[in-house]
View (cartoon, rainbow, N blue to C red):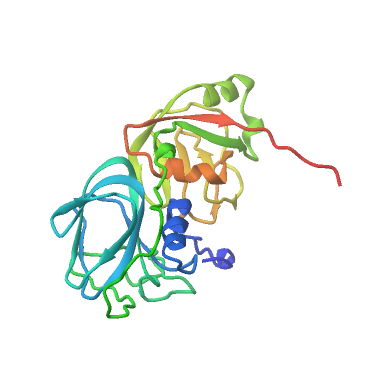
Length: 272
């Protein structure tokens, strides 16, 4: 939801932007067409009319009408077909796109579910979501099969830039936060991920200031909080790091217990 930050409304949207764009691209949809963001194994969906779907993101076991299928690429769907998602082998977020997008309700120009904005926070068991169909058996005319690259799901390095309050850390603390490994905790949702290890510091809270997806906050109590797409638009904790836009998806895909390591990048400015 772009343009509503002044009202305190979060940007929202997909946690893994690249996977989201990929499924819509392969389906030749508009880049903003709605998809399903799946974060739990055991998900199943029945299609009441023929269509074409695409999956990307986490690597998971998938079954179509009881038979195991590839976990990415275009998949033709017949009336009455049932798709089931099994265990997640790599990553934690899977995207299911459909031809012309899911026709869920729109709130403030977006179909994204957001607490306090949409009628519900997430899709529940028994929910029905409309989609367009041409009432014909879908066919795929292509000379190749696009394969989703899972490599980023195994990468532990998270590229970051120094945040506005990074300079307030001592040199020792700067080296420590960049040099050590941190563990993804179970405190993880669409708003933020909290890292498990405490990081003692002498920083004080700041005046309320803008924050964005990818902002890394450090609380006076030593908690490291990495903000994601559903994060608030302002915050009062020091903003010590800002995650590279392309690496937010890496972090969002990590399961609890997985370790990461920040890699500090330098800002390059060009003279005009």
